[in-house]
Image 1 (cartoon, rainbow, N blue to C red):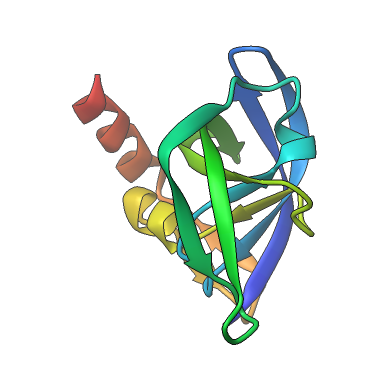
Image 2: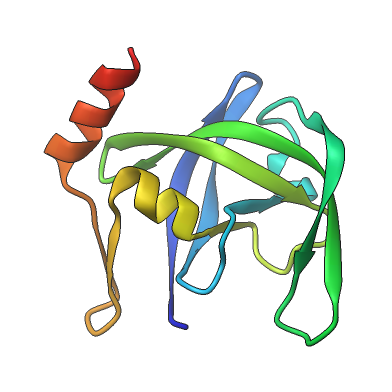
Length: 128
């Protein structure tokens, strides 16, 4: 597991702010702290809470809410669902589900995130 941490601009229906985002190849879901999402977007209560394993053996985390946010990397607009985690140690964690959706590549040797602007634009056009 490797990580890269960068400030990214986030936007929701209630506001916008810059948050430090951890690109974590060991995380499945993208997550945001309850404190960081405040003032950005409305939280959606999950019909059935998610129980997800953590790095600590035998320890599970119960997730009750999610939200959808737009975020920008080098002026490339991306969006995804984020699990809302109270007391999360980071403001935002981007996980592999988001990497796969947007075909994000991580270059850990140079601490770089690689997003092809043409790919992101093509994905957004398909969704429109």
